[in-house]
Length: 215
Image (cartoon, rainbow, N blue to C red; front, side, top):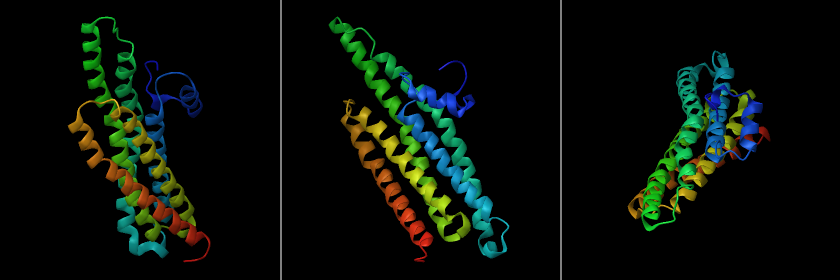
């Protein structure tokens, strides 16, 4: 990564960087982008619903959801760079010397600190993806039926963002020796992932029923 942020990359440039052997962006950054796209799709449903007489009764809710989706979109986009910044110290820590007992001890201390840092943005991605899933499910009931497939796509994307980010947490948790920290993350973050998956799957199935004329 040069002095530019990933947000300044074109889609092609970002995809090429992701394709390369560069340590970042990786799964975390990709999950953040996918989450931002989920929020954008939710915003699209709001835009296609707002001002329509058929959905006038939901206008206040649609406006609220649109504002929330806009904030989540930007937060998740920012997390692409945040994830890279959080992971790069860890990638460098792997290269620290370990020829002497002192070097091994220092390397282990740095690694443990960097592993926790690398977990933080993926955890934030999970939390944001969950918020997207919640507002998007509401859109299935209140948004324009003409855009319901977009709400379904948003559900699929939010699910991918949460589960993808969780994988990036787990790979670091496996190396963290602080049992209390690992316990905290498993007890407090994994349920958010599970809830996101449940909501997204429920929304996706609801959309399928609508598209098939079953509702």
